[in-house]
Image (cartoon, rainbow, N blue to C red):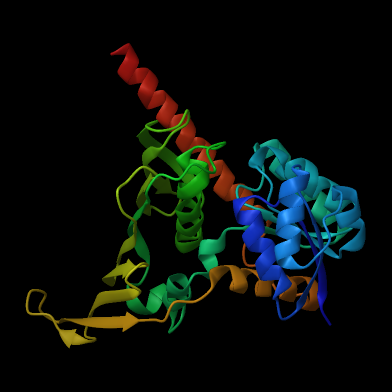
Amino acid sequence: MRLRVGVLGAGHFGRFHALKAAKGARIELVGLHDADPARAASVAGEAGCPALSAEAVIAAAQAVIVAAPTAFHHGLAEAALSAGRHVLVEKPIAATLAEADALVALAKAKGVVLQVGQIERFSAGMRALRAGGGLAARVGRPLYLEMLRIAPFRPRSLDVSVVLDLMIHDLDLALAITGAPLVGVDAVGSSVASPTLDIANARLRFGNGSVATITASRVSLHMERRLRLFGDAGYLNLDHLKREMFWVRKGEGEPVEQVPGHGLSRETWADSDSLEAEHAAYAAACLDGAPVEADGAAGRAALDAALRVEAAVRASLEAAGAG
């Protein structure tokens, strides 16, 4: 059985969704919509599906992918959920927490899947991290996380800040890794090449005592994506771009001269298609009732964290101006 999927939004990432859905093993792409008819026709031609109105896409589909700009997430997702359709909405889940809460409540009332496009949960690096006993087997309980995500400037996704564009991925991962609510945020940031924040650094405190420092930039000269994690039983370093990870833990791995009694272990992995994995998980949730990896509640928590980071940046800028 294949899941009949429609795509709402055919911009940069909406196009990727449409092309990937068109080749999905368990997905049948039934149509797509975009506010720009010429763009819709072009991407529909590439994907081999009809370009339709939003209403026609929802009517033809069992499940919808919302990949329009953030301001339209709530309206399009609400229309699909109200019609009893499953929804995969790109991150952030919505523009406001009230909108996110409304979508979560509506999906629950209709008994349908609401998945949020926190695609980094499906990356090869995070899957390697979860394998083999996961973090607990490598470093024990997480105490401190350091996450870095920087990239060159690209003139897209400028309707939102770097916090909602890039940092939200690591905010979601930090929440998932610590398994605790966010209780405190300090942050700094600046706009550089757009009207919104292009660089941000945040220090997060969680309810279980864990702390995370996250840096995101979309105006750097090169790409970096790293995770460093200190636990009560060891230390781990993961480089997404180099596709390698090492960790130091007592009594395991190759002996480390600088840390008596501890050993070094390494792991590498082949790259994989995160979007394909995300689509496969969406199809499994809709068709088989499989657990939703990044559900509405997770999307809402990531949005809440992102908005709190933005508020903390504004406060720091105001304080600097007042000084």
